[in-house]
Structures are given as structure tokens and as C-alpha cells.
Image (cartoon, protein in one colour):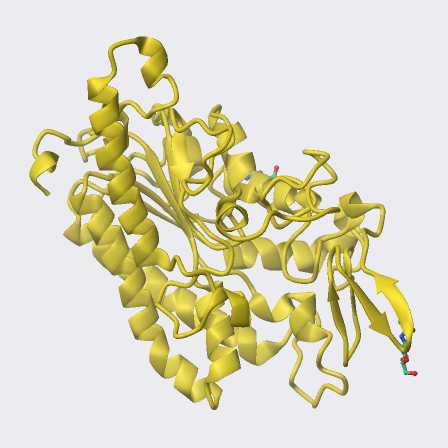
Amino acid sequence: MKFLATVLVGCLLPSILVVEGNNDAMDLPSCDFPAVYNFGDSNSDTGGIAAAFFPMIEPFGETYFHRPAGRASDGRLIIDFIAEHLGIPHLSAYLDSVGTSYRHGANFATGGATIRRQDESWFENGVSPFPLDIQVEHYTQFKDRTSYFYNQAKEETDRARLPVPEHFSKALYTMDIGQNDLAAGFRKMMNMEQLHAAIPDIVNQLTAQVRDLYNKGARNFWIHNTAPIGCLPVSTMKIRDPKAGELDEQGCFKAQNEAAMEFNRQLKDSVVKLRAELSQAALTYVDMYHAKYELIKRAKNQGFEDPFKICCGYHDTRNDVWCGHRAKINGTEVYAGSCGKPSAAVSWDGVHYSEAANNWVASQIVNGTWSDPPIPITRACHRPTLG
Ligand SMILES: *[C@@H]1O[C@H](CO)[C@@H](O)[C@H](O)[C@H]1NC(C)=O
Ligand SMILES: *[C@@H]1O[C@H](CO)[C@@H](O)[C@H](O)[C@H]1NC(C)=O
């Protein structure tokens, strides 16, 4: 915390600005975020877990990158569309040592990451060894080491790929994490009551990391809540004969979505409390749950096919052949390839959304439609007036 004293507020404006309703919000000056630092799981991992373990395989990345690009999708993720919207390059993963530039931020997200440390491994259950607190630890090292090398550099070319130290307090800090804590709960806990009892601790551990980042100089936070996990095709397709009331009107697994909504309620409360506590922070809470749920609800009239259909992967009640893999089923070899038209798919691989779906959701959230306070992401450095 020693080096903080000099790093003050990036986007400090008099707190008399009233952020209320969209017209006012559009009148706010743009924040010109010079960088984005992201924390999360596979929903926003742009190459971290691929660098740490195994590269993504074909046909991942087929749509936009035309090669596997470290992302769990056929193309870009929501965080990529956010970067484009803010006018900065796609974020390089912190763990990726090849072809990276960190001038406009870094991505600490890793596929399979949880908020709480799990007693499981990547090899067993695909749980990332880099939960949120370790991602923040990576950020701390990143900040210290890049600042050191930036200040040591003799030539501008030696600094070109490093962040400008003053930008750490002006950057936007984005988070999208929690889904895997719920998934771990469904897998390991005896019942939903146990999981609900764990939610306050999961949320507290998230807010503890926001506080920690704030103490290290971060000021502008854009926090996604967790998506409707019970609508993921991998959840719904395993229910062979749904019991009455097990599915909601869209066909999503109700109990799983209720756990997600409870997490979100508590997360929102905590973000509101943090606004009072962290007097120089601008904290935006983004209702990713409802943005994605809207897509599932309106998929058919938005040019998508059945949102429960999986574009890449073969699954039935007994077998799971994940996207890009091969397996023998009933004695015949099955290759789980792409459906060929991922632009019409909501779900790419049963767990992760297609690029087309990510684009749809990103365009919904960047203008503040699903945010509290309801301001566009380009203006997310302004503190709402409290009280
Ligand atoms: C394998 O056999 C089962 C049961 O007969 C059938 O439902 C399933 O569609 C078959 N799968 C493939 C890939 O042939
Ligand atoms: C935000 O953008 C979405 C998608 O383009 C649009 O449907 C929505 O009406 C916009 N909302 C506002 C408040 O501008």
C-alpha cells in the first residue's frame, strides 16, 4: 500500500453530478479509459488458461480469429466487444508470454476460475488454480513489475508494450465471476440449502477483492453479476424427464437459476454498501443475468435458433463429447465438430455462448440498459450521488 499515496483518483469529478436517468448520463463527459483490467472465468478469458495448460483446439475461434485464440467460443467474447467499444485493443492474458501487449490493460481471467479457493484441480474437474484472490495477486505483481520496468526503460520502444503507471488509477476494472462457485456447489454440496448458506461467504470474498484492488489504486469498477446458469444446455439436457415445476417457462433449470439470483441479490447489496465505504470508487453493477435471459427468451425473434441447441459438441443423457473432441459411441467414432452456422447459435459448446450471442449481449450492456447506475460503460468513472 506504500506506493498508493501518489496514485489518486483517475476520474475525479465533483460528486454533485447527479447520475439519474439516461439523458443526464449521456451528458456526462466520457471517461476515456486508457486501459481495462479484467478478472473472471472462461466467460472473459482471452487466453489465460490456454497458456497455463493446453491450447484451445479447433473449431474454437473459427468465426473471427479463424484459429483457436485462447477463448472458449467460436469468436469474440463480451470482454472483446467491450474493449472494441472503448476503442482499445483486445486484452492480452497475463499468463500468455507470446505476442502480448499490456499498454491498454491485461486480462487475469482464467477458464474454470472461482471466487473461493476450491479443493479440486484442473485435471479432475477443470477448476482453475487461479481463483479470484490469486488473480488479484497476479495483478499486484503485474503492477509492481511493469511499473519498475517502465521506469527503468531507456527508450520509448522498451516501454511500448508496458502500461503507463499513471493509467492504473484511470483504468476500468471489470469482473465476471461466480458461475463456477455455483457449479462447484451443485457438484459437491448435498442440497441447495447448503449452497444458499454458502452464498454470503462467496459474495464477501468477491467484495474483499474489490476492496483490495481499491486499496491498490483502482477506482472504476464494472461488475457483472452471474448469468442464468440453469439455462446452459449442459444443465438442461441432463434432465431427462423434468418433474413438474423443475423447469421455468423458458425451459431453464429453476433451482440453479434461483441460486444465481440469490447470489446476484447479495452481490448487488454489497456493491451498494461498497459505494458508501469506498469514497472515491465508481462502482457499476451490471445485470448480466437478465441481459442473457432476455436473449434466451427472445432468441427466435432476434435471428437465433433454439437457445438450448448446442452448436459444437455431442451430448446425450449418457455421453458427453465436448466441442472438438472425438469419442466412440455405440461402437462408432463421433467427432464433435461445429454446426457450421455458429452465427445463428446462442450456445457454442453447451457452456459458452457463441460470438453472435456475445455480440448481442455486449451491445445490450454497454449503453447502461442493465446497469446500476444506468450509465453507459464509456461514462462508468462517475460516482453516483449518494443518498
Ligand atoms: C447410441 O445409442 C443410443 C441408444 O440406442 C441412441 O439413443 C443414440 O442416439 C445413439 N447415439 C449415436 C451417436 O449413435
Ligand atoms: C441500448 O442498446 C440496445 C441494443 O442496441 C437497445 O436495444 C436499447 O434500446 C439501448 N438502450 C438505451 C437506453 O439506449
